[in-house]
Length: 302
Image (tube, rainbow, N blue to C red; front, side):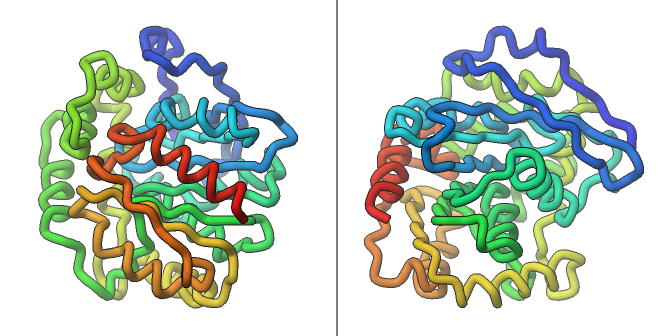
């Protein structure tokens, strides 16, 4: 597997994200290795929160939440998915699969970092990957926070707004990462913030991950990932792990998943699920501190 690695110099002007990156070498599932990046904050002895980003962002998305969580005594681990942020970027679309992304995060979290009693915080693809991990290794998790995410199987069609997004990503001659992020926010990010989302991708050859990820979402019953996701649902329906769904009030892509998760996950039943107001798909950008307070309270109360 051929990969590209973004020069660290390109991250020099990233605002409000002054964490030293950590790196781990993982098997690329193709006979070689790749490097995955992550940041850590907060006390090493604190309860672990695994912050999982999605498409087309990177761990920078959580910059307004990390200080709140760390100050609450939580150990924060925020990886960059392979193909995103500071992590290595496979250059061929065929290098990416749903199963590989699940395995790469599993290897980092459990083989390298040996995390236990984890609170998963998953948004967008962070939930698609994270919920699979919860189902496959539930003994590693203490809680789940699913925010603007889901676990599609392809049995129900995706909303038209998502199909519009997928078609735009597939057809764009040049993929405008910053514009994609801005379109998922209620409040316009500053030019410096938008530049930070562009920073990992100095040219189009680095954008294979963001370009291919929408095509990996199961959209039909015979999708390659459907069987594994159906198996994950079967397990998740039996788990009594505390489960919180703080969805935003302005995300047409994932809004329909909130009631499904609330009524299906045993650990979500009878729980008050706060709505994050004034926020779009990227609620971490629009209301990061408020979401972080919700998560900290959830950890303390459970």
